[in-house]
Length: 516
Ligand SMILES: NC(=O)C1=CN([C@@H]2O[C@H](COP(=O)(O)OP(=O)(O)OC[C@H]3O[C@@H](n4cnc5c(N)ncnc54)[C@H](OP(=O)(O)O)[C@@H]3O)[C@@H](O)[C@H]2O)C=CC1
Ligand SMILES: O=C1O[C@H](COP(=O)(O)O)[C@@H](O)[C@H](O)[C@H]1O
Image (cartoon, rainbow, N blue to C red; front, side):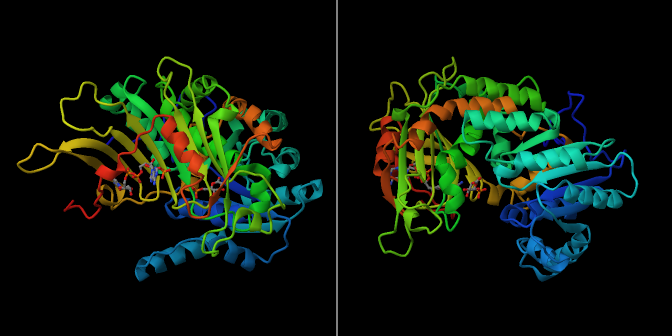
């Protein structure tokens, strides 16, 4: 049986969908930083995805705003360049036609981020597009560097805020660099917008497999029953990229891998895996549980982490982090981190949650690996491999359970096998939506479940801030690792010492489905 719903059930008065079909809504989306990388690679392709799948109400208009002066044609080329067309010619032609229609609702205006007069002009433009509809709604998408957040939010509030309709403001990470700067940002933002108007994007919360975690955990009795220290030995959440900073070193160096990926994307995943069952699926109930979990994690100490920075590949084809011209000379910024998180509660005491992330590694993947305890009092000869539940977030979404099985035949030998839910086979007819598409849709629906609440952010920064200050002061050791390797040697040992046992030698995966 498939249970269908438009999203979590409604409870709070403030949660108002702009997509109710019985009450047609007028929406204008205003994208700040429209000339930038994020806008062209993620925001506009996601908006197009929503447009072509009929999720944007008729009459929706999208206005791009940035400092760069640009002709509309050039802007259109820029924002549609990253939309992928399918191989099938007929289908590609159909999407191309939709793309041409989409361009008609995409406008562009250049202006400064600190000039009231430019925002007044923007407001006039938006009003014109709203065609006099009094309660038209506005979604402000800030695809901007954090240094501009408050500046722009203040101008919006003063010059572009819709007095009669709904206002929603979407902000991108990083939300600060530590607890103090995050609080400063929060204070700035909350003086201008109500918390229910703010949507802090962590795009990992929009990924299909991350959204699936709630269902895996709370809609399956067998997972619910074994989800605790009684059966789970350790949890690993891994993010690997096979590319380095690639000219983005200037931005990256200011933050480092912990602030870039671990404090947000990986910690969000951890909180969903670790939290208690929310009372309902209402966004506030879900976020209440995440905050409770985060508050039970003790702040990281130096011994809880292993850091690394990548060097050039052995063949010299790939440059090291310090060879990137945009990286300051002699920078100590970590491009790899592994850290153990300890949750001080009844469910998780003693179970390490190991978060690992790095750039320029041997492969690209994000996965969650839950390793279960040894079978007590085994009656079988030899070592039994531990069960593992693996949720592969990307690429090739999958959920698989590694388990012991009888080797088919006349012997009574055991072998490691898997219960395999590979999405490309099980759901071959389904398109997995892009995370941004899914999150912008949630925002239009008024659903905050997959956005970060301010107290959640506070709790997250409390875990990291003391350690980050030590790293910034150069007080934490870091080990070099080669571009394309598995990361610093020390990290492998670190994971082993935390109790993870790898049974790889005994395991062969055959994705051709057939012979082993
Ligand atoms: N449905 C599907 O698509 C399925 C696919 N498979 C595939 O089978 C293969 C094996 O799967 P699985 O056993 O789950 O995963 P792997 O053997 O790839 O990894 C298991 C764990 O061992 C670590 N590891 C990998 N190499 C080393 C090393 N040299 N030294 C120390 N630790 C290491 C990994 O860490 P790290 O994350 O840091 O690399 C990971 O935590 C994978 O390619 C997997 O994708 C298996 C089952 C189902
Ligand atoms: O937020 C970020 O995420 C990307 C990785 O996102 P993905 O969806 O491609 O996995 C990462 O490359 C970037 O450094 C970081 O800022």
